[in-house]
Length: 354
Image (cartoon, rainbow, N blue to C red; front, side, top):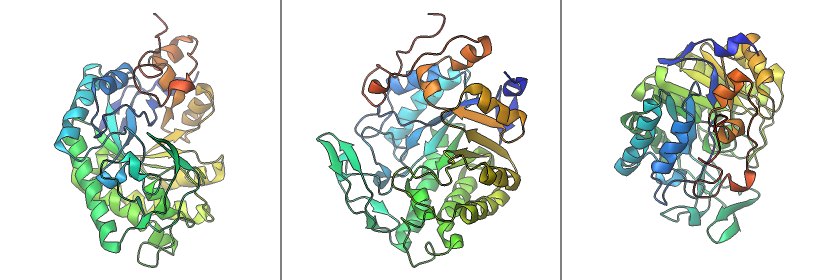
């Protein structure tokens, strides 16, 4: 294993003891009102030895919820719940950022407390079904956000970032990937707007750049990261111009001097990855899903990435860092329990010393 993986580094103002971080993963263990619980705190604290813990997607406003039992960060109750989590992680000598995720059209009214129609850049119905308490249901045609509502959503992200810091987080990661709201504005199949947020590449990147700018102004660029997934078709996304779109986006974000850019699910398009690496001035975090640790660590050695993230390996191995250091075998993820309630497949994975 490359020694580069274990070199300390700094991401913005966050000092990391090594470069093996935990990727964000939807967990569905919060209360129906989106409040993290003691179980959430235990889960994240167990994994605090990762260089950085990036939390599950957390809705910045009520319309941002897509799935059942996901957390929010837009009320005092949410702040109090997240404080339990951040305190537990810090007590275990960890570092944690809260990922701000607005699901946009990837939602169903039955999954939200207000039962409203999902919102999106354009009224384009997503393919597939959404799991609800009554079973899988077809996702409805979303309501198009007005130009004024887009600006209001930017302000919601700003307030959510401030709330995350008030809850004790070391920073936030803005979710611009995987087919959720920011990605829906970027992609030409989901963004059919005719105002200043639609049409040209410069218009389609505007929403993401405005959110990143607002968050950086609110909590500091050194506490702000952003995640993208160029060309990722997840959640019925189809991008026809990734080699124009993402260099334009990254180029527009670069002057903000954000703490990091997190690239995941880039479809194996390493030519685009290398272009974005050259354009990005600060820490680049990379997730090569489906590959082993040695493959990911080589990206650090080769200068492609500064930090790597892992998802299911971190889920199934709370002590992944120690296992990798010592060459211990890894637990196998129990996918049947990944999105279930309770401890099974969440906090009950054994450590290698158990």
